[in-house]
Amino acid sequence: MNELNLDISDIEKRMSGALTSLKNDFLSLRTGRASSSMLDPVVVEVYGSKIPLNQCATITVPESRVLSVNVWDVNNVNMVEKALINSGLGLTPQTEGNFIRLIIPELNEERRKELAKLAATYAENAKIAIRNVRKDGMDKIKRLRAEGMSEDEAQIWSDDIQELTNKMTVSVEELQKEKQSEIVTF
Image 1 (cartoon, one colour):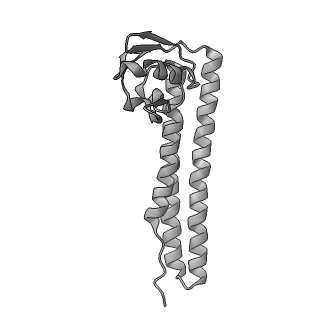
Image 2: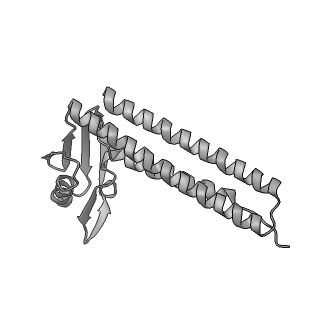
Image 3: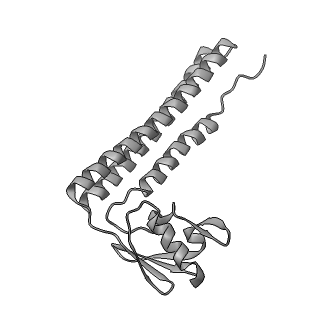
């Protein structure tokens, strides 16, 4: 008989991927506080190709609501400025030489509520992804059970997958609570 086994590390890796995706989604939410990671999605067309902003400039946070972008090559300042305007972040660049300042505007109460709802949506999507991975694992256990895996072994694997699912779901909820708190209190 073949060894009937389940790769729990693959399941954990896939669930962790949902958590990583959630963290990236949360980075895109503007909370009124400056963070250099806000500019991670910005891509600049320079030197004939598209590159991430952080590969052609230094991004710093000199104040809680200000981002400073120091473009390394003064010839690329216009392209960086254009990329920032077209990024959809709603930030207006203020350029002086090869320095670009971005002031993060205060969020009004309505926008804070929208962002908190969006954070909840992102978190729910992550939970759904985790549950889908759990379902795949449980389906695999059923197939292995049909191929001769003992009921006790199947139960152990099921318990391990459920424990991992619970742990990941708690992590999602903690991240959501942290992000919503950041949105509402700043």
